[in-house]
Length: 212
Figure 1: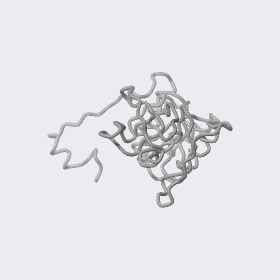
Figure 2 (figure 1 turned 180 degrees about the vertical axis):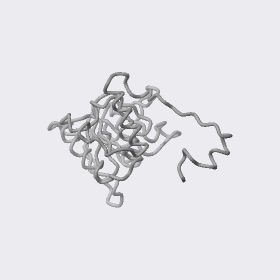
Figure 3 (figure 1 turned 45 degrees about the vertical axis):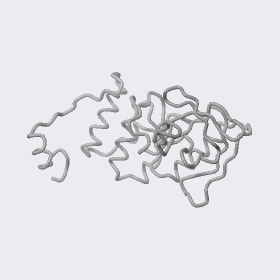
Figure 4 (figure 1 turned 90 degrees about the horizontal axis):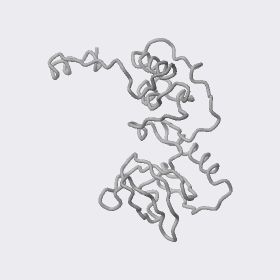
């Protein structure tokens, strides 16, 4: 039928053996976790209309946000950057005119960043990993990498490696687990994209944490 479940090629590759997972180990074991797993199972099988009432907007502001489109990511990051600044003056970096994935940023300490390009030899930072600004210096900013090393990066290289980290794309969020409230954007703009919906929803551990 052209699906992984009924693929003849995969059947031959695995000798007809298929392992069916019956438990979502990311979801919590309470009612809300089980309810989320039920919705994920139905979504994957494209069963029933999606139960929007179970995902009504419960939290006015969330630290974690997921979007599909970069323009949405940029808008949400701007909104939360201004909230995070709270009138403070930070280090300003203008967007690159030839790169629509960048935006004007104003950096201060503890601001979350998302790495979008690996630099293993030069800085020991990795694509899709999240960092926080530890310190602002004269010509550089300092972050702490995954092995607790302080890494100094020139401001002029910010756009080479980082985006603001208040809102991630669903691609960047793959592999993450969220045990606190988060918001999913672009759901209606990608209303027929089951893969996006599944990836975004399955980052959560509880139905009561997810806002659409």
